[in-house]
Length: 402
Figure 1 (cartoon, rainbow, N blue to C red):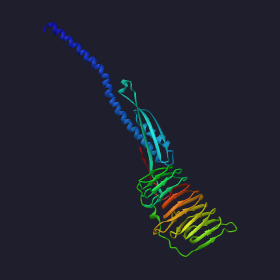
Figure 2 (tube, one colour; figure 1 turned 180 degrees about the vertical axis):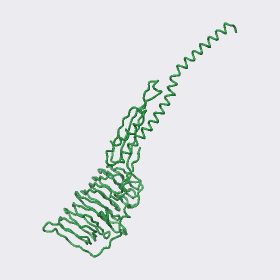
Figure 3 (tube, rainbow, N blue to C red; figure 1 turned 60 degrees about the horizontal axis):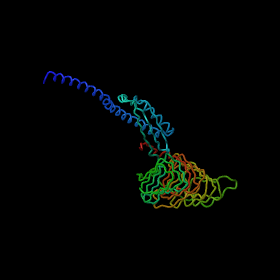
Figure 4 (tube, helix red, strand yellow; figure 1 turned 30 degrees about the horizontal axis):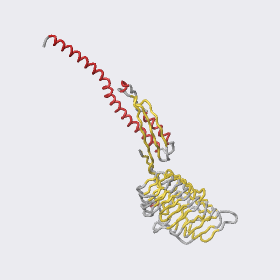
């Protein structure tokens, strides 16, 4: 190679080295952006997890506080939690409560970038969403027949407002329950053991099937059958001419009928019903600190037409919270009809596990403590508002549902 060739080669190599440095410099910026972008992206993913955790905390915390506005509580808890994340420059959230026992939420947060800024990307938006619901609540109504078809039948026009309660249906028949349109049942949960039901519409909160149903939740609280002695009262009672009340002391009442529309007062204590007691339309019945014991399956209190009831179970003693009960050793089942009650108060446990109970239309009552155990249940156009018995297990467990 000549000296001229050697010189030219040297110049060429110098020029290529310069070109390589230029090309490397040109590629360095996007390569750094890509590599740094991965870091920013990982940081954004980490912040997404933090935002989701903050959202979930808000959802769960809102349902754990029964005496506050869940939407407001969820908003506050989310904002308090997300405020600790320094790299989040902005946030927005929205919460909605579709039912008393559910809440939905979504949030968008903005994560500041470090490396992507050189590519003109200053922020990364991150969106999260979630939902939560409450499970549990006291078993205010327990329908116990495991083999009966249509063990629970809710007809059109029924309104039940009991958000702290559950309804349990032990039937596994086909169908285990029929839920018709035109009714609203606002409870914590409707738990049906069977997998086959007929749902024709209407609003039934917390409807779950199949769902594990426990045994009779109140059986252990029922005392031994009281001794049924001779009749203390029997026959027909007419309204007093002076308009005063008919008062009955505790005892055994055998096949009693109240004519007209009197005011009937059952005095404090245990009242044993032997045979059928008939209370006609328009009567007013008062029973404070009273328990009614049906002596056998053929014994009942029959309300014929709309009556006004103020029935309250004892709050202390052997029959605490027990408003109405029947012999525990009874076998078989019988039909039992509660006709209309208007603007009534019923407090305590109605324990009739061998009765196929029907609540007919214009049946309205409110209760701050109510429970019922029946063999089967038909609910017609009723209007009920009630809360669990004070001694019932009222554990409400919020959980994420999304």
